[in-house]
Length: 212
Image 1: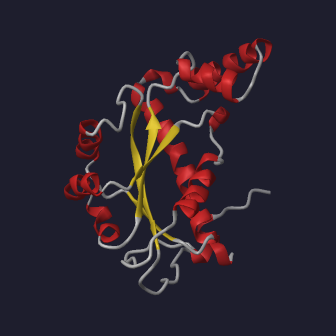
Image 2: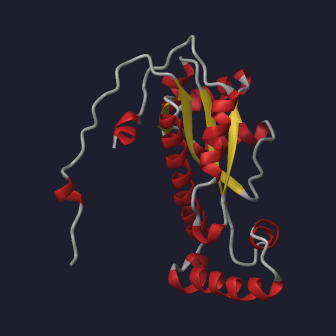
Image 3: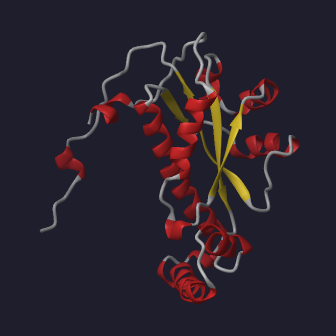
């Protein structure tokens, strides 16, 4: 529980202390190891160290302003769009990443198709697919922030941005393929220049119902 209380949304970062590359790599690896539906890993992380691009993002990402004013590492998490069962990416994951042979791929792909088309009705609208993969990207976000806390590094998840404008900046800098990805969420990592604020949450009895 101490680690969970250690993690909080930092609003003021030190200007004279940065997160090292090797530390950030550990954080990114935690995101890579996060679970995803059918193991499809429908995400991509952009580590934005370029000051010019950060400055271009600044007017459209008000949630990033506090992080920008400190010494932080910015990560933009993308999620895949249009990832239906017959997308070549799905076959790539099953064959090249998961190492499934053809006899195993067929039934798994059939199960994946049934899940998308019947169980979750994801194929009725492309927006449904994007929302589904976007939700999974938040699991990776959570893993990354918890790894940061374990390394005594602070973080701030960022939803405060104009998504359309941020995508325009990324497109203009050739950082995103909008045929396959959209922007899900941002997160910054650094070292706090403030006291950790105690968490204020509802009582466990208010958010949990035991069904016995």
